[in-house]
Image (cartoon, rainbow, N blue to C red; front, side, top):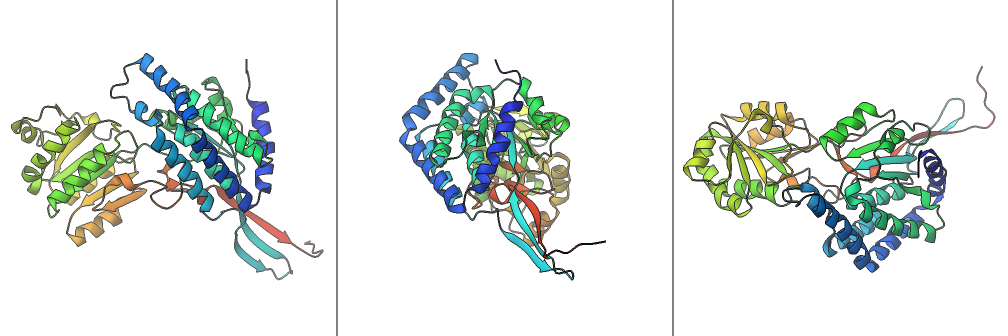
Length: 422
């Protein structure tokens, strides 16, 4: 029985040097080979994933559990993973780039280069796609990685890492370059304090997980925050278009962080707009948590899944077919509400008033801000980044989709010809 992960972390740190030695072409070819392996072994991957799905069903019926959707791998999702690997392989290698160069008065030749972080640790929950995305991004940028997945996806993760190890072996790289830790929670604290072996920690999952890592990690941490996203339907909005964007942002995939949790409606159009949501919301069984002013409107139209919104429903990431609804007097009140409750992930305004659109885009403090589009587009692949480890909601080093170009740091290279300084 494993009692410490230190030997494994040491092995990963050593393997990181082998990854750094790979050329850009070799790293791209490695990812393409991994994509082929995933496609060739879809049946096996789906069978292992089904074991995880069965265990989740044994623990509960899974109804309304967002982890069920995040856990599931079908043919399309496996094909998407393979395509994501190919997309990352095509991206420019961020490591090795010279971003500054000069010669000093003393004749020293200076270069500031982008280099791999080293060993990146990622702690995540029931998302087996993260296993492949993280490995791809880390390997392409010259890093090794330590993966701490949740027990819900253990069969899926071990299966996927097995194919990652096969790809590494085919290119002569120590398989410890991608390390999957045991699911036991006892190893989380050991990982978070392994400052000699791990260079960066990225938590991806629930707010509780993220806050735990923030409070307990001795290693620099990139916070991929929860997605409490808002949409503001301003008085001049094209209402039919706004309805489509609100519905899409809530129901297209409610278990992901870029889905909308709260819609704010200008009082001037609330009576017209709210009834427009009824048909689609009923179709998708969306439970509405309405404020005091919106509640009577839904009640009058006999909306079946209606709750009085409580204070805690605003600022809540539902991760389900649920949405908070609030009527506001104008953009001032909308901005104040967003400032108070946003997780600084993604926010949107639906309007035809360019002055108000410009103000919203300038004043909302968030990783991604939208005018007349669904918040569901906040995604590394959609933004042309190939894949992402998560959406960073902090401001230092990286903000928004945390992808390939952020998995590097800087190194000064100084070449002299015998110079000394007294």
